[in-house]
Length: 145
Image (cartoon, rainbow, N blue to C red; front, side, top):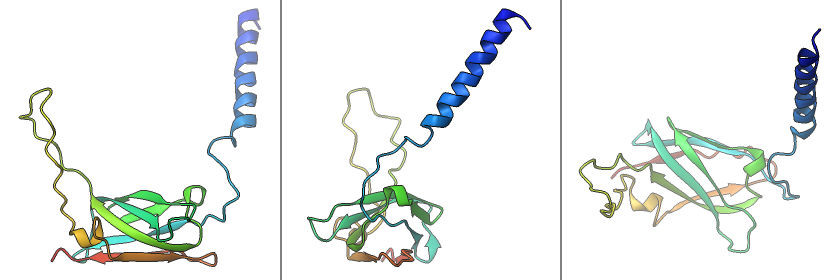
């Protein structure tokens, strides 16, 4: 085995060992009793194609808030980013539509048109209660009218 081949092999093994020892050091950790949250979001009984769902603490002193993308009617917030038990205000907003190609550089962007009624976002009436016992599955069937 040539000297350069042995050096390459050593570097590869060293890199793999370093990756294995640092693999669990990714995200932030805390001692909060976080819970995974998931569910379905429909608009007029059809899965919402693309949106954003936010869980905002009903109590301003609560420790967590979270958001997730809704894709084909489903969303999921994993345990590592989850919510602590408590009451939450839920807001669902539509994903912004593609911007007009007629804008010139420097032109201000027009405000995004919200396709979901305000009672589900800026004036939301949606709520969820996260519990330690779970399951914390929250399904929302929104109505366009």
